[in-house]
Each structure stands twice: as C-alpha cells, then as structure tokens.
Length: 297
Length: 305
Image (tube, rainbow over the protein chains, first blue to last red):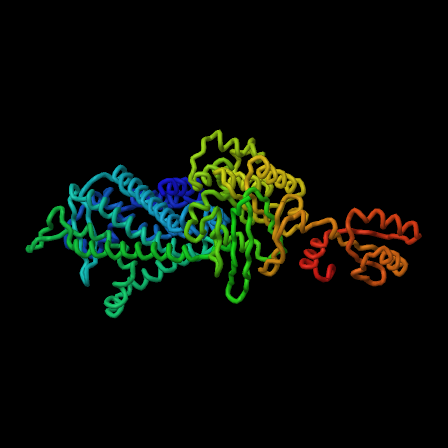
C-alpha cells in the first residue's frame, strides 16, 4: 500500500495540471497583498464605517500580517474546494479516460486498495495545498505587513462585533484553523472521488462535486428558520467554515476575553466529527461501488 | 501439459444483451492459444472476465489451479495482459511507465532489468521520451514490456495487432513468438484474423455471438485435407462432370461460373493438370481451409454463405 501511495503521488506531481492549483493560490494571495499594501486604508474605512464613531482605531496597525491572512482565508477557503475537486475528481475517472484503469486493475492490487490510495493521495495534495496557503497567506503576509494584534469582525445575530486577539495568542489559532480546513477540504476530496468512481472522464465528477458544494453552500446561507433547523444540520457545507470558531475567543462572566480560549469548542468538535463521518461514508461508498463495477472502458 | 486456465460455463449479460453464453475452454501450459471471433463476438468480455475486470454472471474461472473469485491477487501476480489498446500515462516516459507498473506488480526491478526489458521490445533508445510522442506500434511494444516485466507464467494479448501498420504487426508477431519460444510463456492471443491465429497459435477456440463454435489444435482444425476449393471456369458443365468423375463431390455451383468442392490441398495440382489436359479453361482457382470458409461466413455471410 505504501508503494502504491508513492506511485500515486509520483503520478500527481508529474502532471502539469497539479501545479495550476498552486499557481492559482499564489496569484490570488499576491493580488490581495498588493491591493492591501497599495490601498488597504480604503478597505478598512469601508469595513469600519458603522463603528468609526464608537472607538479609535489605528487602521495602519490593524492591517498586519495576521489580519491579512484572515481576510485571504475568508475568501480563498471558498474557492479551494474547486482546486481539490480538480485532482480528486480525476482520480478514477481520469484513469478510465486514459485507459490506464484496466491496465492498473490487471495488476495484483485490490480495488479497495486503489480507492484508499487515491483518497490518501488526494488528502496529501489537500494538505500540501493548505501548507502552501500557510506559507503565502500567513508567513509572506507577516513578512510584508508585520506582526501586531488582530481584529476580527463578526456578525452575531443582529449585532456586529469587533474582537481583538493579542499577537501572542494568534499563531496556534491559525495552525488549528488550517488543521480544521484540511479536514473540511478532505470531505470535498472524498465527494469528488465518489463521483469519480462512476464516470469515464474527469469533467463530470469535478462539475458534479463543485455544483453540490455551490448548491449546499447557498442553502447553508439561507437564514430561514425551517432551513436552519431541518436542513442545515445535514449539509456538510454548513461545517466547512467552522475554522473561524478558533478565532472567536471565550469570555469570562464579566465579558472579558480569556487569552488562549475558544468561545465554543463543543461546536467545533461536533463539526469536526460530522465532517469525519462524511469522509468515512463517502470513501466507504466509493470502495463499495468500485468493487462492484464492471470495467468496460 | 497440464491445463493452466480452465474456464467452465462462463456467462455474462449486460442488461438483456447476452455477451457470453455458457463458454468453456482450457489452455495448457506452454500453449499459444488463439481466441478467434469477429468483432463483438465476446472475446474481450471473456478476457476481461479472466482478468477480473468484469464479474461473470455465472460460471467459474480457474487459473494455475486457483479460483479467480478467491485468489485474484495470487493469479494476477503471475499474469500479464494487454486488454485492447495498450494505454499508459502519456505524460510519463516509457521507463517511468514500466517502473510504475512493475512496482504495481509487486516487484522492484533494478534500472538494468528495466532497460533490459525495453531492449527486448526494441525501445532502448527511446526510454526517456514521453509516451505521448510514441507511435501506436511503440505503445504496443511498451505494453508487451509492461505485461512481461514481472516474469508472468501467463500472458494475455487482446487484439495486439489492432491499429498497427504491416511492419508493426510483423514486429509484434515476432515478439510474441519469441516470448513463447525463448521464455516458455503460455500466451492467450485474441484476434479477429484467422491468419494471425494460424501463424502463431498451436491451439484455438472460435466464438461467435458469445457462444463457443469450436475448440482444438490449430493443425487439426486447419487440416489441408479439408481445403475448400473454388474454381472459376466458363465451362462449368464439363468441369463438373470431370471433377465428379474423379470421385469428388461438388458442394456448390454458383452463378453457373463457379464450382465449389472439398479437396486435399496436395491433390490440387493434379486436378488442375487434368482440367488443362481436357481443354477446360480455368479463369481462377482458390483454395482455403474449410474452417477459414466457415469463419468468413460468420464475418461476411453475404459473400461466403
């Protein structure tokens, strides 16, 4: 199995399309950084227009590396599923399309092993994609914009909140957020892999996975009670942005932030468990269907 | 020689279409076994069942004495195959492709062993080129290298000459014969061309519409004594009485211009000599195996019915 995984990773890194994802992330991050370096104040004015009179804020200090990374992740983590689907959706269907699936299955490896290896390779690809995001969006931003306390803008119910996280309490939150994002994106990889089992070209599974993510995300954003109570809990997309929870600081009874705390750890833990359950079910279903499939390509 | 492959009562349906209907055959160790049938006869479906790409509807497949349903990995570790086109990773080189599939076969060959195999199939100086730059013939040869790299006992080639030019076909034939003679491999070879099977196989099966038509030794099935002669002459009546006078039964008279009869190939020159002596003009004479005639009648019933 380790040898199979090595082969799979070798194949992924030899394909030019693999690097599209890394190039896309780099381009988006650099554009963000350039825009904020050139005119970040205008963005802050827009963001703070409703609360400007309430308190004094050094906007230049507020646009620091940590803040930049948060802004970039907010945007990018919605687009990255497409990049993950690009690789995972091609896993089986791409082999069928190339004709290599039948050659592969004449070798002494089980179909379950192939599914597991394809899934693990997609997972590793997702991890590396997030690592690259960390390097460009976090470390490069820290280098360009410097280190300072981070402001988080949050809409909670009907009210807007601004929270401040001290600079010595941020880095671990980012590591945890990237870890959470890895699990969330792996659900997309597992979903794309599942569709990939049924198709004989890559376009179908990639489009199907992306469409499901888009539709479910739209539904997840409908703030109607009946959807909130009866639909959202069952949509995996409701949990994709759960990484933000690591930046919501817990407070004591007198509403003073507690350094190193998280507002609602139980919610994050439950979201993680739900995402993991999705992964297990989707990978299991992929193996089940793949084992029963006649290879006619 | 013991049977290395035993297929018993194999059937497979796709929806309402019956692709295989109760096929049974066996392949002995060391055979070059021909699998003959027109396109769509069920050759590829049978081979795909043997490589566990397709699950049979019913029947059993035993290879090396093991049941394919329960010992798939063991069987495939000693089997090499090219199913239809030999498709590889086009963005990788021949060397990388060969290395990948060797490792998937459970072996870790040295660089020398890989290059040795590429030399065997005549790709030694192109091993670093990406497969997307290869001709169909070169891909076919790389496919053979991939099917042989783990030194299998049984090698299966499904239509290996498909899409090749005459030189490519000749190269592949030589490679298959070399692997049989020099390496003692058991080879199963499918084709829709009788001539190809005749040139390479020692035993064969013909299937049509998913059913077995005949199985046996090529030498016996293509016995010269069973040649079918088609004679074209403007004087069919005189030729008819001359030939029947020699005790030969005319099986068919076509358009008052052709006569068809069975004759030992070795007796044809004497018959032609006799017809000439009688002053019966011969426009054309053509002899083919009766099996060939039968096979052609399957593939083109209008012309050979």
